[in-house]
Image 1 (cartoon, helix red, strand yellow):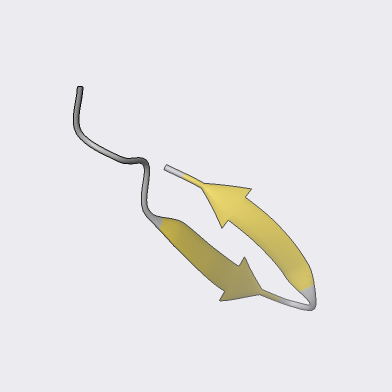
Image 2 (cartoon, rainbow, N blue to C red; image 1 turned 45 degrees about the vertical axis):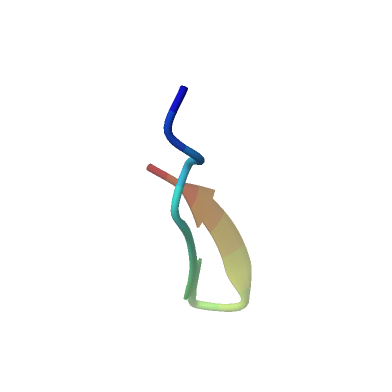
Length: 16
């Protein structure tokens, strides 16, 4: 399975 991309948005971690 592909690893989820984690982005920093407004100081919160968003997992797409």
